[in-house]
Image 1 (cartoon, rainbow, N blue to C red):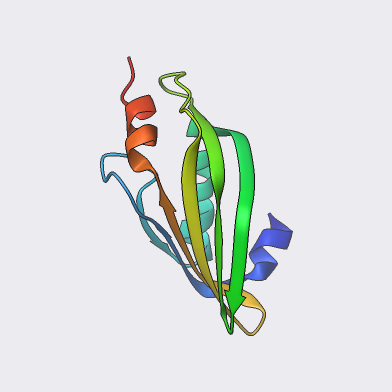
Image 2: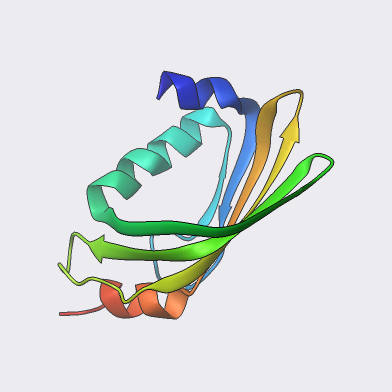
Length: 114
């Protein structure tokens, strides 16, 4: 976490786009809020597959596209493989924005499984 914290600007914004019914969707601002979110995330979600397909950079921005699978702790359900996109912005060697997009329908289905 120290290494990750060193890469984050103090005013970093972490945004997860998708189904607002999911507790992992929303915006967190600042390191303390982001680390709080990450603690909750790690207790509730296990990433079972992650594969980056493409990455592009231009100036202070980067975009990464890939595939992943998750297991939701509460329901025990696992998603099928789904696509994701990540957009990030960097200032003075630190990340100031992380904007996450995923197939939130697939994740929502697993989250609401009984």
